[in-house]
Length: 353
Image (cartoon, rainbow, N blue to C red; front, side, top):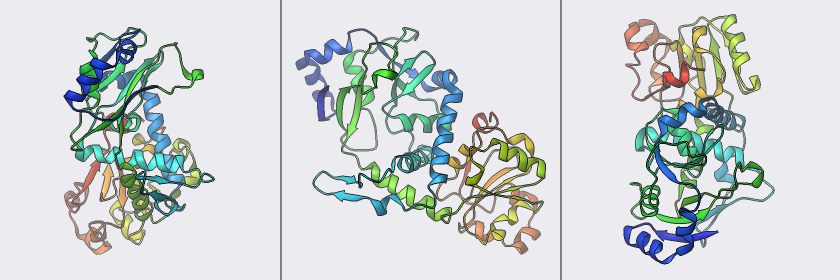
């Protein structure tokens, strides 16, 4: 059931909707309340489940890295201003993993843009809509406000009024006008813990698919349409890495005691490679670490550990010819003074693996 569709979310339209739509009011105030909750309060309730979702996203783009890119499979419908795919082609995992990779890295630049929404279940918080945006916030342990339906009356905050809830969910800074649809959730009955229905605010008429297709294409380019290579300093580290991977076939493994900053040249400045020099930074799930290497990053790393992911083909990684590596001071290499763009893998995620 939809209560409004493709409405510009300004205060006048929101108030008019509330004044004229009795059924919307009845649903909103019927059984359970909705509150604004800090995301950091939700992370701890389902930490392992959220981390697992990040891992699914990472393995999704790694499994599809050699496949035809989405932009080559899509057809643009100018009338509906939307992309369409052949019904016989299942692009769900490839699309969703590229979307998650894009958002995990975009939030570092643009922030969340819009607040995530969701509801409580017995075992924690379920984010929808804004699922991937919430996982991106979790990936960086970002503190933000989230709209949460209090299914079991366990939250301590003040319930929102209808105007404040719509205004909060529709609030954003990315587009001049935000078009929204307010509707009841589509949760399958088999997944519904209680008879309660949740109201959701969905954005319409955005062109995020374009960004996702670009991300999907760029991922294939930086990975050179190939598996990432994992360089391990010892056989023991290699064995532990293999035990921590969701699928060892996603990677090429090598045992090497080379200076790690020689890796880009060893790889002929192509593809993506990870160096692991100590056992303490390896645990399950492991694959999600590759989400943190952005398209234009030189490296991603966990501070204080010997774990580095190299984007071998960048302009700065191409500085690392053997002659320069061997003549360079440790601080120049290890503090990434040769790089112009690096990403940090938060210790809360990386060291809790």
